[in-house]
Structure formats: C-alpha cells, structure tokens
Image (cartoon, rainbow over all chains, first blue to last red; front, top):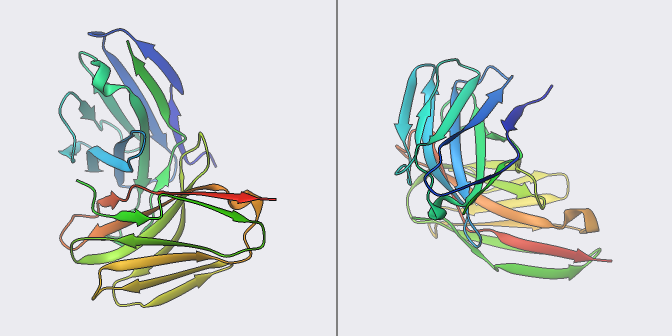
Length: 114
Length: 112
C-alpha cells in the first residue's frame, strides 16, 4: 500500500519556468491538500480539494494553481516560478468524515528556484 | 497565520527521560492533532484529541487538552533515540471545513 506518492522528489528551476508537482493517493480519500514548509515554520496550506473536480484556496494560494481531474490525483502548478517559491511541498489526503480523520502525507518535493 | 505556537522550539534530552511539548492555539476547535516529522520525510499522524476530551493515551504518548486555556501538551515517556524528530500540533478549527492549521513545531533530540 503506497499511501501518498509525490513526484518528483527534487527539482531545480530557473525563475520564470513552469512546472507541475504530482500527488497520487491509493486510499480512496475524498480530501486532498497541498502545503509548503519553510524553515522555522509549520506547514501552510496552499490549495485543497474536497472531491474530484473541486478545488479551493488555502492560506497562501498566490502563484499556484491546482487541478483534481481524478479522485486519486491532485496536481500543483507553478506557472512562472519565483525564488520565493523555493520550499518543500507536501501533499496530504484524508477521508470525508469531517474533522475526525488524520491526514496522510507524502514525503515531499524539494523545490529550488534560482 | 499560524494557529498553533509550540513551546519549546527545541528540546534536547537523554534517552530514558520524558519529553514534554506544549501547543497553544487561538480559536475554538473540533479537535487537535499531533504529528511527527523525521528529517527529510513527510508528517506522520500520532494522536487526535477531540474538543470534548481532556486526556488521551497511545503507547508512550500522552496528550492533554485544555480548551479553556486553548492549549495542549504532548508527553513522550521513556524516550528513545528513535524519537528524535520534529513534532507539530495541528488544529481543526470549528467551521474550518476539515482543514488543519499547523504550529511551528518542536525539534526533539534524544541523545544516547
């Protein structure tokens, strides 16, 4: 059982380049989330999805877009990467039982923007 | 903004000692969760305590919740070197739509 899988694990981009981070979960979870983690800070929510075809903004959505075309996949896009987006990105998922289910996390994508 | 603030930011203890971490938060909550993060890995869920609970145990972990003070504590008893990690509290705020807000974390180092 793979749980939550993120690809790629590492990436270096130049300012202005675009890329897509992939997240896949095999637990049939309805909810999926994208976070970023910066030194000395906890995780901050970028975007999230409560089901296939739906997305919503989190705490720090600017500069990012997301799509949830399939229930098991949640994609995070950077259209024009900026150095401020250098971070570690985590995807997570959990089930529909509101407020009572823990989130399952991937191992992160380490992204550097030069 | 961060909902939870953790104290201390860093903690170093000897193997076999107990480790206590504290979390304070700002709004009313449905539940509070604790996660562990080993270096270079994702977060792993440890324990969830609901707003109507005051204490919960899981193995060597003991969590308390005081909603009147908006605070929680995580106690790890008889610590081991393998407990070395960062620990985060996360709150599921009332009306927050099943989203979690994470604290800034406590870095625990357990030395042999």
